[in-house]
Length: 73
Image 1 (cartoon, rainbow, N blue to C red):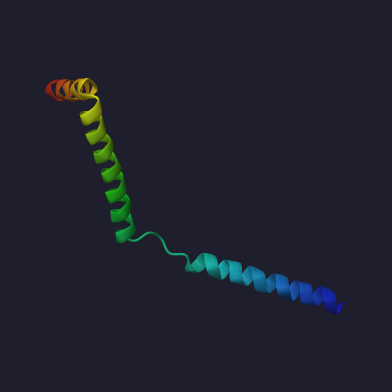
Image 2: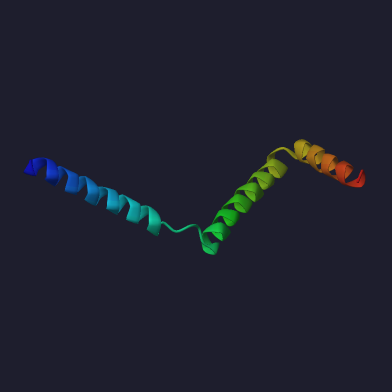
C-alpha cells in the first residue's frame, strides 16, 4: 500500500511540475520577431540578388510582371 501511495505522490508531483512549466512559458518578444524578420528579408534579398546575377532574363520577366500588375491598378 505504501508503494501505491508513493507512486501517486510522485505522479502528482510530476503533474504539478508539468503544469508549472506550462504556466511559466512566455511568448515571443519583440526581439525574436525582429530577428525572424531580418532572417526572412535577408534570405529574400539574397535569393533576389542571385536570381538577378545568374538569371537576368528571369529577373527581367519578374520585374515586367510586377510593373504590369502595378500599372493595371
